[in-house]
Amino acid sequence: MPQSAGRPLPLLTPENEFFWKSGQDGKLRILGCDSCSALIHPPQPVCRYCGGLSLSPTEVSGFGTLIGFTESHRFSLPALPAPYVVAQVALEDDPRVRLTTNVVEAPAADLTLGMRVEVVFEQDDDVWLPLFRPAANQPATPAPLPADEIPAGEYWRHVRPMPRTDKFEDKVAITGIGASEIGRRLMRPALSLTIDACRRAVADAGLTMADIDGLSTYPGGVGGLGAGFTEGGVTALESALGLRPSWYAGGMETFGPTGSVIAAMIAVAAGAARHVLCFRTVWAGTYGELVKTGRLKVGGGGRANDWMYPFGATSAAHTLAQTAQRYFHTYGATREMLGWVALNQRANAALNPTAIYRDPLTMEDYLSARTITTPFGLYDCDVPCDGAVAVIVSAVDTVADLPSTPVYVEAAGTQIIERLDWDQSTLTHEPQALGQSAHMWSRTSLRPSDVNVAMLYDGFTINCVSWLEGLGFCGIGEAKDFLDGGKNIARDGVLPLNTNGGQLSHGRTHGMGLMHEAIVQLRGDGGERQVPGASVAVVSSGGLTPSGAILLRSAS
Image (cartoon, rainbow, N blue to C red; front, side):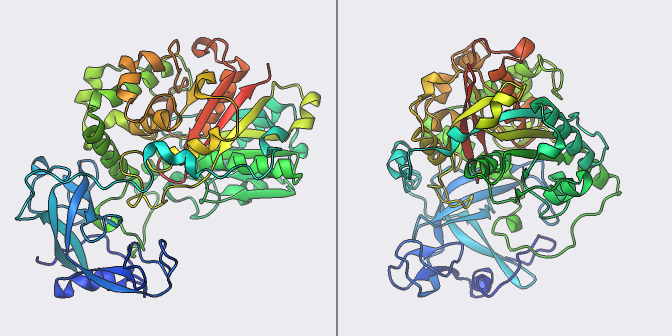
């Protein structure tokens, strides 16, 4: 194919250069294990299957199976104007290897899952991008999707048993919560939002800042203030408030704010601190406005070591839209299933004065909304906003001395069982929902039927579906029936879901808002949206990977 101009190009390294330049002679090459012949992608220095250390680029057939695709309408890049098709292809040589790519020479309407495709290269500068087109010879019927390494119902077999009978969860309690103002574009400094939330959480717990001896956050100061996802982390908050924590943590490689809360629990249980202030701040709304008006410059025009971005897969929406499409294909669901999730969150938001979107939403509104990336429309996606949420994790032996109503921790699920790579992981569900759910239930005698309220991550509607099934509230593939037109997830239903409006209507606080709402419900402080008798709540965090889940219970 002819050269293109303006695609975001990958950073060439000694480890990946062979892949990005393979198309120079028209051949696709994947790193192969010389011991067991497995193909390894992305390239690694060791074979994940046999542990072999001798690996070398291996020429493959260039044929594959189309296992996912989404037509992107909202996102455009230089030389890749919307609409364009982002796809995942499983290689015929080893279906465990999947490539994120673009399908070319065929409109999205002509594509089907299971279609046979062949590689065709597009040169851009010193890179040959492997794209795919429908192969001339198609099977009589589309090929089945590759089987997942672990069947959906078998994750419990891979859960590690507790190393000791005394649990860290039993040594901690959540004693305080606080939130700043939340809005679409507040145009306030991010750190000022953080301070508001933290002061309110400390006061809610009946503590003073002098009592705080630990700090925990996500994503921390890594990456500065890029994308409006952090105020600067522990460093920024400590500098502003003059705290002297004996323990602190902050970083990207945990499952969002829920991971930072669990880290605080472990620190308190180990005796490293007695009162840890956990915080999460977003200012995505203001960030977007500053970029739009030219007051904030982003990007340096450089290359990134990324396997998806060169193909326009620039958002989690592109990956999870393909997850939703595969779910429809496998289980016979339709967009209406996702619509009931969006409508439920909006109905709950109507009773929450802090929610961003509170106007009524109908199924007709949902189905007719503008397309973001198929099958996702506008209301399948969460609401970028500005806001901060804080939580205090305390040693359980301090609870009697505090005026606040404590919430106790029953179990946490953290074990990684599936592959973390977004496009190499589970095919029929959101990656990292099934494994962590199984791990959480292994640490408690409570069962799904004991849960009164669920706060499940909803960066996109499909997230909630994966967590509902992963946590065992219904069987795998049964969410479309379990929802029962939204009745079972309503506030008066079998499993009240995201009673604050969730991220779809309350605002994208990356999971910390869901933790806040779970504590509100278990305290009985939900006002009009309160679920009567709520005593056990589950909170999940993670829109792809990493992810985790926490089971909470009230003091009564």
